[in-house]
Structure formats: C-alpha cells, structure tokens
Image (cartoon, rainbow, N blue to C red):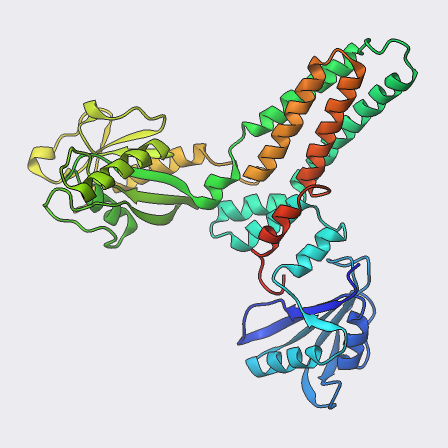
Length: 426
C-alpha cells in the first residue's frame, strides 16, 4: 500500500450543481474527520458541515461517504465529499485538504492505478475504463464497458485455469514418470484445442477501428467530384471545390459518426500524372491512402476501379444531364441535390459494421492481441512437443503471456502511458 494519501476533484470542472472530491489512502478517514467532524457508517451517506481544519471556517454543507479498505474502489480507505459545485467552494475544499499533513493532490489516473496495483482490477479492465472515458459513440461505449466490467478478465481466468491444469499434469509426469519421452496424447489435444480457441479470438474484429474510426477514402481522377461529395456528407465546406484540376493536393480528413459507427472520411488528390512536384506528392499519398483504406469510394470510370475488398463505385455529379444514367453496380450521387446520399451512407455504414465488433462483444486492442498471440504460439508449440520438458516449458511461456496480458508481470513500460490517459480525479 502507498504510504501517502491522495485527493482530487473527481467530477467535472465547476461550476456544477454538485462536485465530488475523493480522498484515498491510509490517512483518508482521519482527514475526513478533520473536515466533517465525524464520518458515517461505511457506504452510508450523511449530511455534514464541512470546515477548514486549521481555522474552523465553514466551507460548505454537503454529503459525506466513507469506504473502508479493502472494500473500496482503490482497496484503500476512501472518503468522498459531495459538495456544492461552485468554483469557490471546490477551491476552498481542495485548499483545506492540501493543508492536512500527509495528503497530496493526485496525479492523473492515480486512483485507478492504485486500484490496479492493489488487485481490485486487472490491466484489461483499466484499459476498458480509459476507453470508456474517451468514448464518443455508443459502439465505443459498449465495447469499452465490456472490458471495464471484466469481460476479458473472466475469459482469461478460464484460459489460465486450463493452462495451469495442463502444467500441473505435465510437471507431475516430469517428476514421477520414468519415460520422459512419453507425452500424454490427451494433453497434446488439449493444448492444440486451446491454441485454436485463442486464434479464433485473434480473428475477431479489433478495437482500433472502433476507437480510431473506419477509414473511408474517396479516390478517383481530378474533377471527379470527390471534394464535393466529402462536403455533402460532412454537411459543411471542408474541402476546396473548383473546376481547376489538381485543386486538392493533400488529403483532408473528416471524422463523423454514421449510425453510431465512427468513420473518418478522407478526400484525396486526383489521380493523374503530374509534372508539378507538390501535386505529385499528393497523388503518391492518395495512392497510399487507397491501399490503407478500410472502405474505398471510387469516383472514376468503373472499369478503372482498383481492386479492394470493400469497394463502393460512386457515379458522382448525377444531376448533370450527361451523367443521368449510372453504370450497373454504381451508386448515383449528386452533391448538389443530395440525390443518392442516403443509400451511399447506408452502404458505407453497412460495410463499416462488418469491420467492427458486434455490440457488447469484447474487442481486443493491439497489446491484448499480441499477448494472446504469444500464448497461442506457445500452446501450439506445446501441442507439437514430443518431450515432457519442452512441453512444460511451452506451457510456462503460455502462462507468462497471460500474466503480461492481465498486468501481473512485464508491463511496467505500458502503465505510465495508460494511466496518463485518465483525468485528474479518476
């Protein structure tokens, strides 16, 4: 347990109707009594006069809650003050707490970090809480909540129990069986089955597209209507539109939410050979963006459309007489009249959903997937082992990968980066 006691405003910045100030650590209850006079029973709220311990000045009247270690969010003693949310009240309360010996203001994410270090949550739950704080769409919120509520942690515990059982069986055989070259076929099958299950998890849609947005790139030759289409979808003038070919020389990104799905629309330079050095750089970037696109909108000749797994052929400028009929397989769209925008957006959203986890499902981030992949590789090696000692070592490697996944070992390098994403009082 840390020797010091921390405090911070844990609600939104004032002014507000109510502000929550949290104190956590071994001196939390004593600090609470110095300010509130007395504390209520654990987990019961009570109205108290809140006074400055050094002067006795009345600061506010509010609710006080007490939580006893280890049955608290940080596994430490906690006191919460629910006071009026004016700036003067909050500032006075924070100054009073800062004047108490042994208390200091918390660092960003320090409450959650203590919860992790004290075993209240594991690293996957902490990552879920960070994602929940940053969630901007309903899909992001639901995916983050699945992690924060321990969905992945419970699954990892099941995997760990299976690996521990296999390890115990193999270690017993190493210690007591005379023939160390004899490997139980049942253990081999179980290792192979668990490796296959982990690889199935790795094939699921990942968290990054959900957090960063599905990359939807509009591409095609100059003056094909890309910028006008981006502006029409965004509902504002984000890209410059002229009749002069080569106007767009660099890509423009527009983050949107389509039906709750996060999307990043990207306008690119028109694809053509150019002697202009700057435009040539834009064309090269456009080509790279097309290759990296999750969904590609092609506004050029359908017969010249590039190969892409999620391609939408757009027949732009459909309001012009010479563009009245759209080729088969293309969606006719007019940025001027709005014709075709709704079916185009529905098509984009439908393809985007294919790349996202189903609502409420657990979506692995890059770090989690890496460690699950390490465990799957180790179990795959165990399934191929023909020597008990090698089999035992592969199972040990699988257990170590799970420990890194939950934060039990080998994650010091990621902790500072993770908890710095949290706000001051979280």
